[in-house]
Length: 45
Image (cartoon, rainbow, N blue to C red; front, side, top):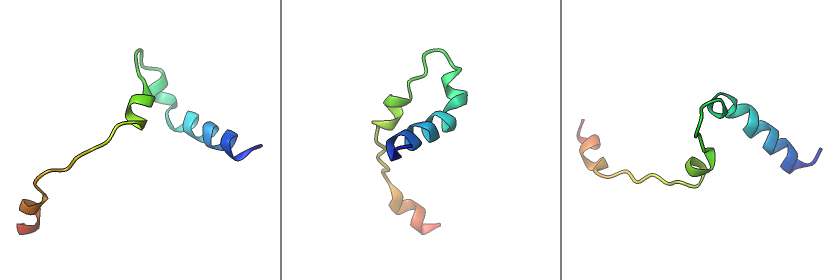
């Protein structure tokens, strides 16, 4: 198998449960990003 095929199979297994949910689109999460704001307060704990 090619490397791309192995990666695709791994992703299918990883997200198998989510695929059972109607309307779930993993692509939106894969293409998203996260911004963390205010980490300075965490360093004071």
